[in-house]
Length: 324
Image (tube, rainbow, N blue to C red; front, side, top):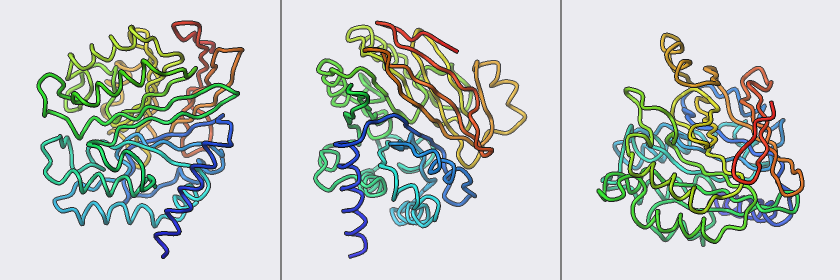
């Protein structure tokens, strides 16, 4: 009965939010170990976001059995501050390797359907959601903001990984779905969420879209073909946070909610990324409008409870203009 009540509460909360609320603030994060201290949730709740987005590695299951991943999600859900977030803020998300299975896990995982059920239960996905019946967990949501439509596209870079040589990261079906989403979108602001960084340079010992150049070029081609308005790529995985523009595309990578990269590599990473923060952090985005143009205020928020590296961008027809 308790599980049924919680699921019903989350479903009603999400439906009410999508139907009635005006999205003005989004918070997102990744790389959150259920076994570590989690000092950021209180600040997230205090900031009163309209939506929380998981960008991958919500837990570190690193499992050899389904039971181990189930226990990881159970432990995360037992955290009081996290419970406060779930009871007050609608939640959506996609996975990466550690909440899918284990480090660098791909589509050959034989128990990925069990992982999928556990993950969708964790984020409170409704029982009748299409995500429950199709392969992978990719999906999209349309929200309203200032009378305009904001589309959030959640990509799955695990379920199909390394299965199809012609589409080794997203897989054929997901690529076809993504193109249809872009072709039919009337949104004025688009957020693309994926566990792996999309426009990061190649770095040793890490994964990124750059290791799949055909997939990266295919994504760039879709952006050129359909030119989705106000597009921002939200990513994670790296255990540090950064905002950067590459090839005209804006990426906000927010990673490391419970742990970060070793200090000895900070100097190297700072050379690769223009704007970085190496402490525990989550990402926050505030949305405003100038006529038809979205204006977004982006900042990393750390344990001290203040904006770090705040930046403001305004969409102008085909690109973002940096305001400060």
